[in-house]
Image 1: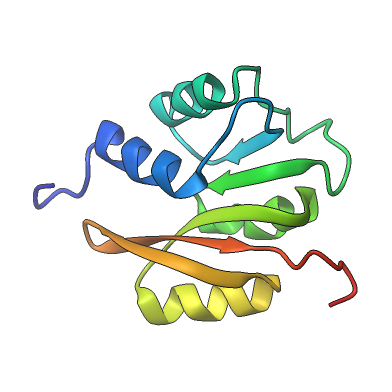
Image 2: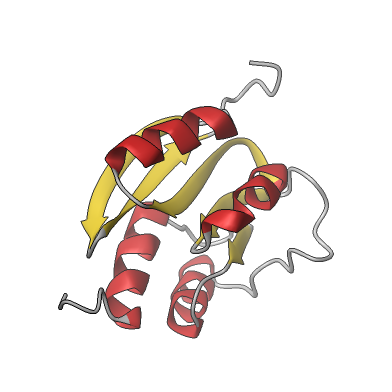
Length: 126
């Protein structure tokens, strides 16, 4: 990872690893590159859900490459699902996870940013 930041393949590798996609998972990706999209689709063995037409709480895994998409991603995440995002730094990731109502699990440096994964509560009222 050079001064210009991580390459698209490097970012895709980190995001897909944190996502932990399994065969059959319903996956939504917002604001990510084509390599990440392809890797996620290969992992779940099916086309990704279209965020424009997907119903609320439909995705087992939501991967977000653009922080402005976090609210939409959270709307699509089902209870107990995995939420993967990019943030400016660890402190921002902790704040964003708390604001999204998800439990932060893992952080990974990606150039000048951090990628993080979290889990939604199993009880949507929690």
